Image (cartoon, rainbow, N blue to C red; front, top):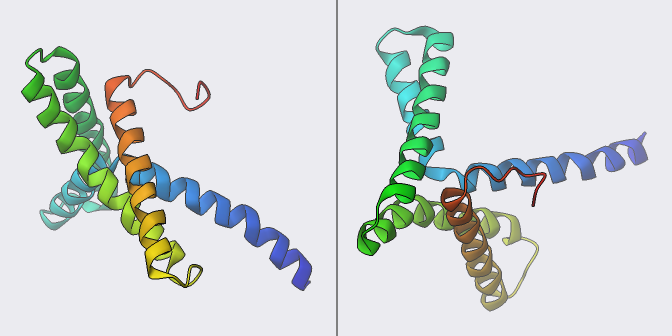
Length: 140
């Protein structure tokens, strides 16, 4: 029985890491969707209505940011849109790795190196998804 639990833990941990990575990559649309859900529920929409409103708010946020990034020609505006999308994703990636490595990596210096590298990776991944949202995960 114990071996089965251990073997089941590995795929669940992998799925949790994938979910956390996806949520970190889409930090801005996810947080906007979450806040919209909370607002809609507080104003009486119910859980189903609030979920629908939040889903569309998150999709709209990503769509608007991707559209602005694709259509704006001024480099400073493109950098601003990229920072709005990628900076929170990088912070979320840093925090994700800091939480995972807190007990696993005893050296504070190495933990910070891993966390900064993870934040950079997630931020660059978010920027790549913003720059070309038509790329699916199967193409990567």
